[in-house]
Each structure stands twice: as structure tokens, then as C-alpha cells.
Amino acid sequence: MRFLIGLLLFFLMLGQQLSYADYNIKGSFTAGECTAYSSIKGQNESVELESGKTYQATGLNKQDGDFVVIKVDGKSKWVTRSCGTLALNDANSPAIAATVDPSKQAPPIGTANGQVQGCPAKGCAANYLLSLSWQSSFCQTHPTKAECIKQSVDGYDATNFTLHGLWPDKMSYCGVASVDIENDESHNWEQLPPVITDEQTHQDLTSVMPGIISDLDRHEWYKHGTCDGRSADQYYDIAINLLKEFNGSKVRELIASNIGQTVALDQVRQAFDSSFGEGASSSMNLKCGKDDGLLSEIRLKIKRPQEGQKLAEVLIPSGGLSCDRVIVDAVGL
Image (cartoon, rainbow, N blue to C red; front, side):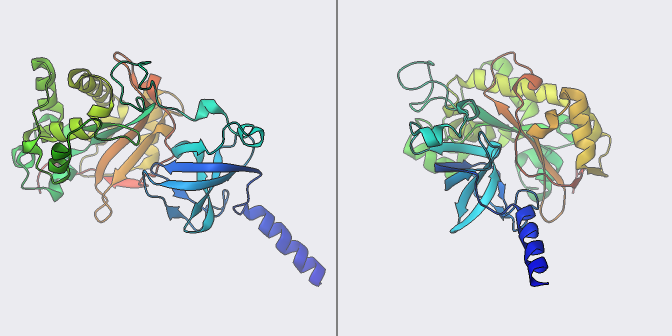
């Protein structure tokens, strides 16, 4: 009887896939918006990782595996490899190099030696996050902001997503003066130097980024855009075009037709795949308020976008978290 119980416990433990790697590595894992688990299959004992924080990496689930074992507060946890950046301490070690596919590492593009003109010293980011806001929800919690006082039921931002930002992965304030960083972090955005764009780009931003009234364009440029490697005009033109394409999709149509209603994540994914291709929704994260469940943003994981590229060309899997359902807020409190 004891033998049978022991055998049963053995198979139960085997099925849990605890945090023991098949391939040992030595390295680090810099997290994006990730959740780590004690078990791959069971996804139990979940821990939210701190975005941008680097954790010790000790193993992979298999050769060229999609899951990494990391140390979180001294405990081993599994995390999806695609939601962060894995770096090795010794890439020349045969035992380690054999477990990693360099093509999955998304290294920075270009370096200080001039491979790509204009990139920061450590190179331009290979991947980005495109963050698109549902302005009515933002205004629920920021009713005194100038752009929220001005919001109306017939405005662009009443039925369209707006531009929050285009963020190079894990890079910020590239070549920005310390006084400007201090003003930005203190939300003294009006003290930041004006962003230089042509008249058409400025007009487009005024339409698709309501927060420009509160100098959001300055904040986004100095914190994120300075790490893009291109001019502010090019940077914002690319972001605006991607936003406009998204607002022409079935996702925006679904959301706008359900103002005041609840929309499920599966509905959004279906609309996304219908617009951008089967499986494309793996790049998307649906965000909502923790307390009210209001749709706040849709965030898209993308490769570094080039001028003229379409969304379907740059979407990559995210690995981030999404709300199961959201309430689509209407203009007004």
C-alpha cells in the first residue's frame, strides 16, 4: 500500500513540472510585463515580475526552450521567454550556447560604432511597445486635466483610441539633460523644451494625442523618443500611422460599438485576428482599471517599426497579461 501511495505521489509531482530545468544555463533575464509560476502546466503560485528588473536565470525547459527558470526572492520560477530578454554570462561556453537560439534574443540594433546612424550608444531597441489609450477611462480618474475638460461626445477621442506612446524596450532618457529628466519625473512637463515637428505632424498629434494640451508629447519624446534614433518628426509620424491603422480595424469598431457595455477578451482577440491575421492577437494586451474594470489601454508588442510598415508586419508575441473583460467607458463622468 505504501508503495502504491509513493508511486502515485511520484507521478503527481512529475505532472506538476516544478522549477527544475532540463538545460542549465548561467545568465540573467530582464522582465517585461511577465508572470512567473512554479509550474509550467499548472501555472500555480504565480508571481508578478517587476517590469525592467533583471533576475538570475538558471535554466531552460529544453534546448532552444520557450520557458526560462529564474530566481525570484530565492525561489525558482518559470517564466515565458518571449516576455523579456535572456542574456548569458558566458555565450562562448559550449554547454550554454547550445541551449540558446541567438535569433530569439532580439539584440539592440546598431552600436556606437555607427552601424545605424543616430542610435544611442548601446544601440537602438529591437522591440517596442505601442500603447493606445481609451481616453474616456483616463478622464474618469483625471477629470481636471485640460484635455478631459475639453473632451466631447463628438470628438475623435470619444470613439477612437488615442496615442499614449511608442516605447523602445527597456530604454529611456537617451542623452537627455539631468534637469530635463528631473522636470519630467516631477511632471513639470511644461518646463521641457518644445518637441520639434513639422506642421502636419503637430496637427495630427493634436488630433490623436489629446494629452498634447498637457505637454504629453514632450514627456513621451524625452523619456522614450530620444532612444528611438530618429527625429521627433519621424518618430511621431510612425506612431501616428500605426495608431490610425489600428483605429481602422475591427478592434476599434468592436469597442466603439459597445460603449457603455462589457466586452470580453476573446471578442477582442477574434476581432484582432480578423484584422491583422490569424494568431496576431498574441501581440496584444488588454488593460483595465483594477478597481472599476474600465478599458484603459490596448498595448501591442512590436518590432522596431520602419516608415511605411503596416502593423501586421511588425507584431510579435507579447507574453504580457490581459484583463478577461473590460467595460467600455463613455465620455462624461
